[in-house]
Image (cartoon, rainbow over all chains, first blue to last red; front, top):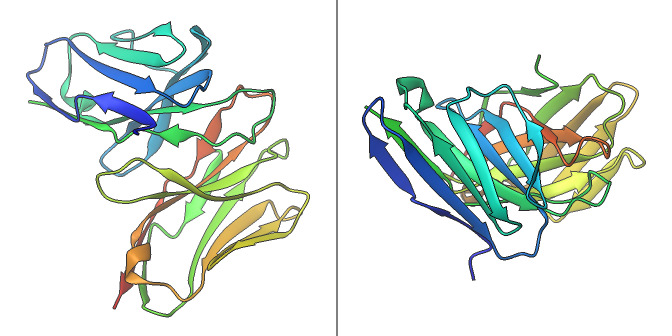
Length: 115
Length: 113
């Protein structure tokens, strides 16, 4: 059983388009994250939701809008795609219980290529 | 600014050798230091983690050494194997930051047979 799943795995699109990436976790976790990994493999956190509430919102262009319909799902919608948005986007999940000692489980990633 | 600095950026080690990756941090409030391992085409996965109340943690061939006064921690991979070839990320976090982890920039490890 896949713990954290993302769709699609690959996404190739033209500049200016709007696209969405979906994430689902079946671990019973209450917190989900979106990370962006650039071509140099740097992992940068973008957003985090706890029980459907936005708790981390990094300096990310307004074109990126996360949505969490429930604890098990976190989607990322990107408007007006730009070349610089090309990256691998990872979803992750964990339990948030007031400590930082909770393992984050990552999905397999979505490789976004903007042409 | 980069909260966690990691070096080297890449590392080539012969099979059976010791791989050492170093990380340094500034924020003394950090109280959790995990290492993540990422294979090509996969998401990062937790390898081993340490809290600052111990100076060393060992799991199989993987050991974290932690130096609180120097604000440094390192990953040692003993008897490195070709299957260990991956990108390794150190990270740091603290309880009040809503689960947020600050990642190093990663080390690409290649183990030659």
